[in-house]
Image 1 (cartoon, rainbow, N blue to C red):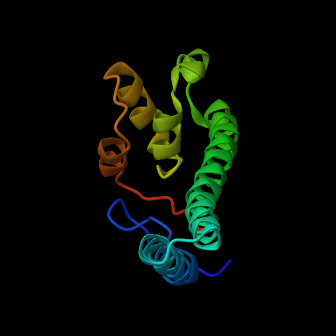
Image 2 (tube, one colour):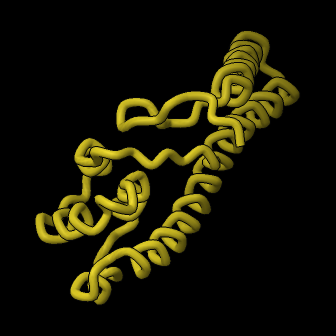
Length: 146
């Protein structure tokens, strides 16, 4: 897969211009126009158009939320398998202690630094994704993201 940019803790979010920019802006314009039409020229047709515009905004957000939820579940599976392979024997029984935020953040840690970072995250009960990501010294990029 093409690597469009270098990833780091500061720059790793995926931005799709056609989705996050164009589609969202068009949906908002449609919503505002439908709201205007409903308020200024009320009719049942205008009200239905407003309802559809609102539903499209909901679909936009829930589609993204569902994709991210599935992505997090896949990451959880991949990273648990990776941890089984890389963590020392004393940490392997603690793999179920990791919550989804910890696992999703640790996926960016290189294989070499994962064991020490995983121990620190569990021992200090760190759960903030940003804090964990900033602790990573050697970033392992992820370009296959939803």
